[in-house]
Amino acid sequence: MYIYRDISGLQKHLDKLRIEGGTIGFVPTMGALHEGHMALVTQMNDACDHSVVSIFVNPTQFNDPGDLTRYPKPIEDDIKKLYDNHCDIVFIPSVDEVYPNGAEPDPQLGFDGLDERMEGQFRPGHFGGVAQVMHRLLTIVNPQRLFMGQKDFQQSAIVKHMISHYHLPVKFVTCPTVRESDGLAMSSRNRMLDPKLRDKTALIFQALRQAKEDIDKKSVADIRERAMKTLTVPDFRPEYFEIADGITLLPVKDPAAHEFIVACVAVWAGDVRLIDNMIIRG
Ligand code: AMP
Image (cartoon, rainbow, N blue to C red; front, side, top):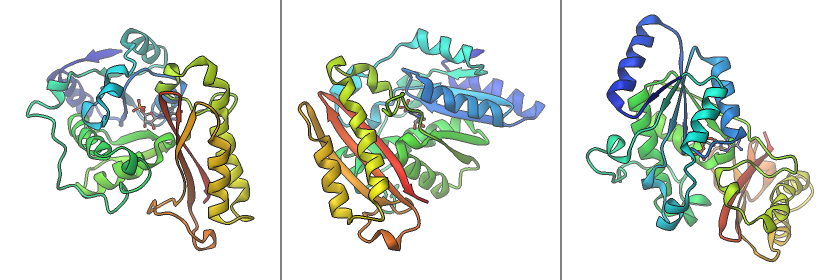
C-alpha cells in the first residue's frame, strides 16, 4: 500500500497506472474508519483495478469549530485498517495541500434547492464545503468511479449534482449503509457517544423502520409526529425527521404522488449529532 501526503507524488503514481490501464476507484473519507468505510473499500476493490482512499478532515464543511477540533483522528489505526482491507493507495493531504489558495467555498455553485432543508437548514454552509472538497479531490485523483455511502443521503445528492454541474467524468456508486447489530448506523462520531446513551441510539433505526411500515397507512404528519415522539427521550434531541422525495429532497405531502421516498433524521444524543436515513419507497 502506498501512502501519499503530496498531490504531485500521488498524481505521478496515478499517471503511471493510467498508462498501464485499468479502472481507478476512489473513496473519500474523513478518517476514524469503521466497517461502513471498509464496505466502500471492498465494493471499490471488487469493481476497480486500483483503489484510492483519501483521509482528509475538511475544515470548510464544519459549521461548528468545536466539532472540527473534537473530530477523531486515529491515523495509525486508519492506515492499518486500509492495509488489512487491501487498499492500494492512501492520500492524506494537509489543509494547505488541498487549499493552497485559501479555503472559501464557491459561492456560485447552486444546488437546485437540494441543500435547503434537513442538513442544509441545520448546518449552514456545510454543503458548500462538501461540494468544494469533493470537486478538489475529484480533480486531484481523477478516478473513473467514486464510491459514497447512502448513510449520507443528502450529501450524495449534493455531490451527484456537483459532478453533473461541472461535467466531471466519474461514475457515482452508492453503497448501502452498514449498521451495528441493533441498527445504529456506523459512524465515526459513534466513538464520541456517551456509553450511557449508546443503548438508546437504536431508537433512530426503530423510528425509521416505523416510518417505512406506516408510509401507506398513516399521514406524513402522523408519521413525523410519531418519530419525533419516539426520539424524544432524556438526553436526546431530534433536530428533524423528514419524509422527503428521494430525488428532489423536498418534503413529501402525499406519499401516493411519489415513487421514491426517503426518511431522513438528525438527532443529538448528548453532545453528539447523529444522522441516518432509510429509503421507504423505491
Ligand atoms: P466520512 O468519513 O464520514 O466523511 O464518510 C466517508 C464515506 O463513508 C461517505 O461516503 C459516507 O457516506 C460513507 N459512510 C459513512 N458511514 C457509513 C456507513 N455506516 N455505511 C456505509 N457508508 C458509510
